[in-house]
Length: 330
Image 1 (cartoon, rainbow, N blue to C red):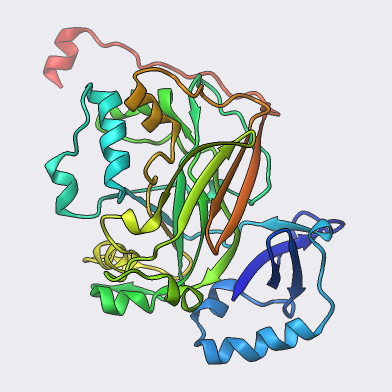
Image 2: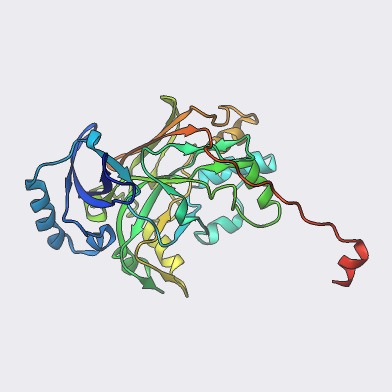
């Protein structure tokens, strides 16, 4: 089952509804569910409970894509971005360290960072060029929507907390990110301006037939810039499954319904990795006017255009420099 959040083209910006997606490829229709339907609560229902609701929605007239604006499927209560593709770690490491390597610490646990949940954008929204960057990049990722609160759960228990999956583009300002990470912090301003999720959520049960022998989802992932292929991978190349990621995140901590957990960038799923492997900015960083389209098998596509920023940002205030004797006394 595919569930989308949307508003009608003529609706006010604050309207948010949930609907059932029917059809394949470019020929799909959106059948609204009753007003007040919560997408995360719907994901938490057993499939047998969801089916009658979906059947009822499918009986009514559907909306054509031209009649709706797809919204982010959820406005996450929190977002965690993992680093599960070994090939990406190796490629980016070559650019940062001058040689392809994977730190031994990567293998120890599925590490993650927290993201800015209020920065999510819809599947077809324009994305404004962030300030202070000459190296705008994309990151092709697979994301899971959490539908039940869990804490200290093993992978088997964690599976029940995963309501469904969607496509994610974790937009990144690489030069800003690099400055921040030299301090052992971040990335923060290098990533908090936009994260695309969508186009809808495919319920977890719909993908049970896509698992490999080790239980990993095996879906083709690809990205195009201005219609030209620039990278791709398979989700089965992750070092950890989503169940293992949820389990790790839940250690001595709550993972809450409404969170989004992402795989991290797949192999060749970001320009920074290609730059690291080639030793040059080839392909070039994203510019205003570029269109980035990401597709994951069975999940659909997100397509966003980079546009000029519509408002000015305040100047950055550098730190005051204390005399050395003042710093020593501190």
